[in-house]
Length: 332
Ligand code: ATP
Ligand code: MG
Ligand code: FE
Image 1: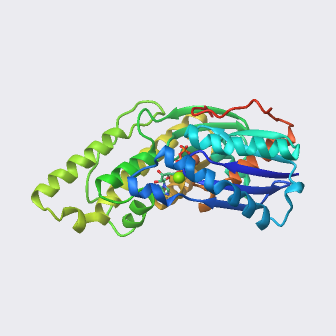
Image 2: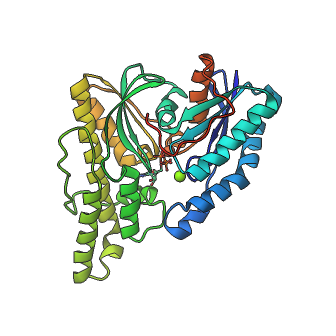
Image 3: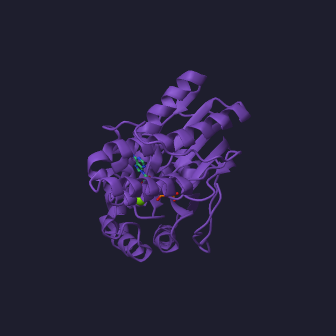
């Protein structure tokens, strides 16, 4: 079966072709415009999706060396995300399905981040644990089956990606700051600045206190030395990254202990973080876990994960009608 996947939940317009479970193309059009505003501007995002969606789909079809009449079903991100952005992908998918007279498949974006692990080998076996860390979410999920997932813990305030991006803002780095903090951290000392670990008893997370602690630390240091940031960027970034990563991995360790599950995955944009990736590998060796880390192109938003999730639904004939509408909020 040939599946066209469409992703438009935030600020990436993406289209992918999946043939019998194999990804043949994964075109991602980013939106540089938001860097000027220090964050995603919803109105500008939906406008850019409208401009990008047709060329992106065309390119995905071309790169897969198929014809649009070869497509058997279209899968799209229904939510969660920005409503105006989701509407562009949803409307496109509905029109395409109607025009081609093919089935329509709705996909949950947070499930798709996890299902990205089924794009390539090695694939995790059910049940496995997934730490999903992205721009809008931080979750520990027990994945029992493709579409049977249990939320074990989540953030009570900011998401991990938000913690990276808001810290980057304090450090005067452009949006999205996560990748830049990662880059600077490679040259820094993670023990240079002590930052607090929030005391949350269960499997939930909190990152807003950390952001405040970083702000106060930088303000205090700048009183002594106005050049503090310029001179210490690498050490600050390394310390921040180390703290965020240990918060995430300590909870993951706790979840593994509680459930007895030893297949452990990470997913979402922050799973591109080099500190998290190497930290997970080290922890996996220590606790004898089977660790699953997505390829970089499948960490941040992409339509390949939508297409692969769509393929699994296609096998079950899990289709939706033309009355479907996007949802800004959706649970895994
Ligand atoms: P959600 O999936 O929750 O709806 P989203 O789709 O905006 O949110 P993703 O595209 O999955 O999120 O991830 C984007 C986030 O990942 C941003 O916060 C970005 O800073 C962060 N990120 C990307 N690469 C890295 C990295 N190397 N280190 C840290 N953070 C990173
Ligand atoms: Mg994005
Ligand atoms: Fe995402």
